[in-house]
Each structure stands twice: as structure tokens, then as C-alpha cells.
Image (tube, rainbow, N blue to C red; front, side, top):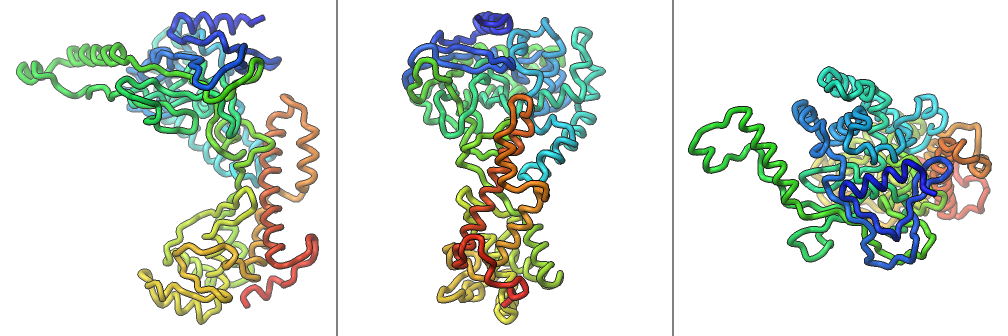
Amino acid sequence: MASRRLIAFKKWMKANGVDCSDALDLLEDQNDAVSVKASRDLKEGDVVANISKTACLTVKTSGAREMIESAELDGPLALSVAIMYERGLGEESPWAGYLQILPFQEDLPLVWPLEDLDSLLSGTEIHKDVKKDHGLVYEDWEENIVPLTSLLPENVDPGSFGIKEYLAAKSLIASRSFEIDDYHGWGMVPLADLFNHKTGEEDVHFTAELPHSESDSEADETDNSDATDEDEPSSKNSSSPEQSLEGENTDEEAKEQEEEEDSSVLQDDVSSLEMIMVKNVPAGAEVYNTYGLIGNAALLHRYGFTELDNLYNIVNIDLDLVTEWSTSSFTTLYTRARLSLFKKLGYNSEYFEVSPTGEPETELLMLLNILLLPDDTYNKLDQTGDCVSKEGREITIGKHKVVFGESCRSDVLLTDGVCEALLAIVDKRESLYGTSSSLEDDVVRVESCVLPRDRRLYHSLVLRVSERRILEKLRSNVRERLGEVSGGKRRKKMNSLKS
């Protein structure tokens, strides 16, 4: 049987223009998480939900709109204020029936304590970024949110504007919001945000029904949705012919006109948001949305979870790691000069991607070749200055002519010296995870996690395992290039790299 909160949510939907097909079942698990399953066979093209834009919680629809616009806030910061405001109203909020179905927060790393970030995410792609996010969020809260508490009406709980509440609102926006249209911008879309994600396995598509449009192919894709834009509302600062003749309105008249224009925009907006099936789903199966083809680092950072068999994982190798390797093999002056040449030749990367199959980005191979160039070849390139000709950027690697700044096959750039450098850099990248556990140890720990108790540990380990497996694939590819037997000793010593 449906819980009280599900029953309340369904009543709220009916009263607020959210039409949910009876072919969808909203189900709660033992942890109060809601998922969507098919109550009967669903076919491609079936419209399973129609959602009025006025039911969406946005800056434009929130009771906090005037306060937000007076403070000149926008983007996620403004939407956070709208969510906190409506939560602060409690049962008086028009969205009370919707907000009570949502968790207080999504368990994104953004809301984890710093000690969990350091103990669980060290070495991973997102560790530094999340810690940076923490600092920025606190700054935003102190600068933009705290001053608003003195402006709240008496029926809004000021406690709803604390730092924990702000972090919670940010987590909901990051994991559940959709882009609605140009007028509303991003907002919370009831029902649409209950569908779980599955990478590359989209069952249902979030879109906007466009008036005066022949198809949904005009929709602009986003990470979470394919919502499209309605006609932009007329400018709030534009004057009618009557105003031009009569002169400027008073502030009160201008405000009244603004409200009338906004009301007109909402009334004239005949477009709606829809959930449309894009494949057949049998009765009893869960119906999935997708947030895009993204790897575990982005999934954990933005949405708070990972997938064991994600095919879109990558690893980045920071320029700092390459610099660290170079300065340990050559002098600092030597390294700086070669990096300067790298930039003169048009390369600007601060990090280099390693693909899911362990293939390093070509720019990384170009950089390593520059770092390993013989002095006479380097001097020839460097003497050409900032605006180098094609001839001045050309060198010979083996039997191949390579022009820096132009595309080149990776296998040509994978010289023995570059391969040895890559192995050393991969070791440095691997060391960021610490020495307490190996890849094999991490795999065992993932298997022993008990959900939901070990949720943070589990998803952190899945992320780390996915990254370490890519690094291992890179090692294997490089060793194969060197012609080594797996597990054998390296053929060359690091002190022979320069030659």
C-alpha cells in the first residue's frame, strides 16, 4: 500500500496540473527512496506524464521571487533561495505536498564532512574539486544568504536559511533540477525528478511540448533533460505606446504592470512538460531516465552515486604530475623551458585524459616528446619563436615526420622513452590513492560493503576501482608497446630517458 506521503503527493499532483499516467507506479523502498515502475507494458511514444510549468518550483513561481530579484541573485543560488523559502513556509507552501516527497538532501560529496572527503576520496578525480566547492558554497552562503534572513516574512522559518539547509538545497538542485525554458530557467520538476538514472539506458525522455513546433527535434539537450524554450516574455522594461505618450509610470504602476505581464506570460504559455517513452518497457520493470553518458566521477560529484559497469569512466593526469616527473629526471630550468615551448606550439592543457580503454590523450604524448627531445632538436624548435612555421614545428620520430600542433597517430608518438615516462607518471598518479590498499584490495572491499549503511564508502570505492582499472589498462598498453611480458621488469632505467 502507498504510504501517507505518497498519497499526499498524488493528491498534490492532481490539484496542481501534474497528470501522471496510471501506467506508472510510484514505489518506496525501505529507505524511503522513491522509484518509478511500469504497472503495465509501456510502448515507445507513450506519453506517461504531462506537467504544468506552474507546478514547477522555480524562481519565477516561488513566493521568494521578489526577494530574489531585489537581491539580484540568479542561477543555482537563486533557485536555492526559492527552495529554502518554500521549505521555510512549511504546510503553507504551495509546494508542501511535493517537497515532503523529496529527501532533505541528496548524499552528494558536497554535503559530506571534510574528514569523509579526505578519507574516502583522496586521489580520485573529484577530491580537489569537491573541497573547492565546499569553500565556495560557504562563501556564497555568508555573502548572499545570511543577509536575506532579515527580509523574511514572519511565516517563514529563518532556520530554513542555515548553512545545512543551503547545502541541502544545492544538493537537490545538482541532482534533481531540469532546465525548463528561457523564462523559468532551471527548476524543480515534480514527478520528473523521481525517475532513477541509468547510463546509456534511457527509457523515458523529459521534453517540452512546443506550440508552433512540428517536432521535438528542436529541443536543446542538457545533462538532465531535453527541455525546450517557449517564446521569451516581453521585456519588463519595455514601454507600451500609451506609456510613451503619457510619460513614465510611478513605481507602483510599474510594479502592477510587471505583475500583469508576468501573469499574462503564464496564462499564454500553452506549452507543457512531458515524459515520453523512448523504448518499450515491460510491466513490472523500473522506468529509467538518463543524465547523460558520463563516468563515475561526474555521477558521484553531481548526483551522489556510481555504477559498477559504467563504460564512460575516464582518468585525468594533471600537468603538475608531468612537471613533477620531469623535474625529478631533469633540472627545473630544463622543465620550464620545455613547458614554455609546449605552450608556444599552441598546447594549453592543464590535465590530460586517459580513455576508458587506457589510451592517453595525444597532447600528453606530444608534451612527453617535447620533454625528451635532444637539445639540438629542441633548440631548432625553440628558435622559431611564438609564430612558428610548419617546417619549424617538424621533427622526425623513427621513420615518421611529426608536426607539433597537428594531429598524429598515437603509436608514432609512443617511443621507448615516452613509454618509460608514462609508466613513471602512472605510478605517481596511482600513489595519490595512498599505499594502504591495492586495486585488488579495493575490489574486495566493494564486494563486502553493505548498503545503505556503507553508502559513502561503497561509491567512493567504486569510483576508485574504476579509475585504477583504467590506469592498469594504460600500464598494460604501454608495456605491450615496449614488448614486455606482463609482470616483467622494465627494459630501460629512468636515467636513460633523455637519450
